[in-house]
Image 1: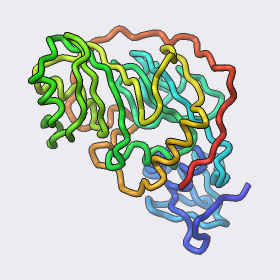
Image 2 (image 1 turned 60 degrees about the vertical axis):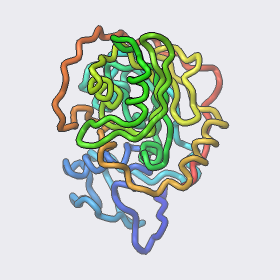
Image 3 (image 1 turned 30 degrees about the horizontal axis):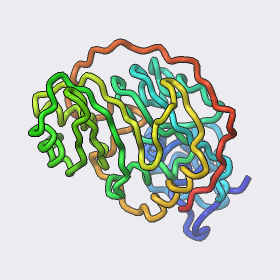
Length: 295
């Protein structure tokens, strides 16, 4: 199997080569390189090293190759994450999302959803698409239904929508709508660490339940907790179009590792939850959509 290079005379950056192989995302690839788990031609490289067409790349002793340009071998799924599942690929973490799904191929989450939260999250074996979807500058929407411990007032809605100071910044204006006395809907294009919970806490509200119901054009729909499905051809076509011009670097505040959710330097709050036992994963009868993603 031959790796693919955009410019064979200059090679391709090592982290991109690893993510293109489907092994992991670019951010996880950087971590693997820093931990000296990657070699090129038997030697440990530095971050930023480029891979040439004739180079022999290994991750943890296993040789990897670039993906076929068509990416027909890539997996793209939607998963309804239950409360208690942690969005990490580290298998030694109890309740990790990889063991919960038990997919036959190596996949990793696109972004993350806090352990006490539930709802829609994407997983894929295509490392190249991860950052493109996560970049807030591209205005990819994520919709949530949130239950809080106090009455949702118009003042609360207005303040949440206009921006809240958290994590040494002010959240971007967003859409907020009251659903019922204790429930509101919020649509974000950012991905700050525990953003909705922090926004509510700033206004002296506590989140009782947080559920993500939509990412971009994909809705949670009737997908039951603990179940996953392959993204449809139409969904992938629309995602493909949405990320086609994605060229910006991800915001620094978005760099919450999907590999290590404890990576944030901010002080952790204590969260008391009842860990949910994942239900048996049921795969729909429909086959997986094998589609290409434009670069």
